[in-house]
Image (cartoon, rainbow, N blue to C red):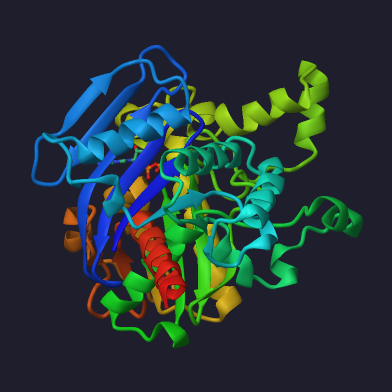
Length: 401
Ligand code: ADP
């Protein structure tokens, strides 16, 4: 089944075209990116498998035009991989926030769209863009069924004591204020692949997954179900990130807002876009830049880097206690897959890293713990698009039956 997977941002469309034979066997036919939608120098980068990549710069006024460009690239006689749009059997979309409406992927209909719209309040940068993507797709391929996969769905198994904040209960009832988590699709994928690689029975296992990228979160998964995760009502909660502050004492907000005369929106921007690695180091949100600065002796970059390691270990330690043990710890995403130094720090409670294997391991499935480690540690490159394509295939196959 040929499935187009779409990840729509406010000014971008990431896509992958996958030919799914079954859950495990698939061909990546093409992938690409539309950037700078709404700007005069919009850009499409298209990478067809087995053919030369291709890019073009042109004004892309909106998502409908962007989506049409993607489809045209897929059937282009020179750079395309399909003979006609009719070859696309379904479209799967990544949706950042589904709140407690969705505990799994689902076919798009009016009711689903209405609920995604309600969730825009909790993900104002992401959900409106996803809706634009779905709308643009219905416009250019009206006959093709669309499925949505939610980053929050995997975390819906958390118990109320893990997802409730100790605020007046009415805010939960009136405004749905609770912890939803994020990166769920990634945590789900790497826990399943990790269990396979480590020879564990997922249904009888204790796994901690560390998704460390621009955004970072750690999740505790018992018997294949999430029991806790570090992100909360929004992806701001938890650990230090590229530009996000993670956990802070909530009283800091009114204190700084009064001192600096800031509006709620300005404070929100500071916590989400100007904090984290960037805010603490004053240099960059990218770990590679901080690593370089730290090597030259920059003290603030060193603190920021150490804080990520510290926050990771703190979460892992808490989740080991919460699950009363752990069989497997998995690292994924830009930092998790490429930074052996951080992974090396995991050396407690019988966890023993194989220093040489860890040093070499980069973005490929690898067990990095020593053979005599009490707990297995693995590196698993994440693949959220594959989860979306699989879910889409299952939902569409059921429709056909
Ligand atoms: P996003 O959350 O935007 O998907 P990524 O998962 O790509 O982000 O992670 C970005 C982070 O990963 C950056 O801090 C970057 O420094 C780090 N990173 C990405 N690739 C590498 C690499 N090859 N070596 C070291 N660090 C990397």
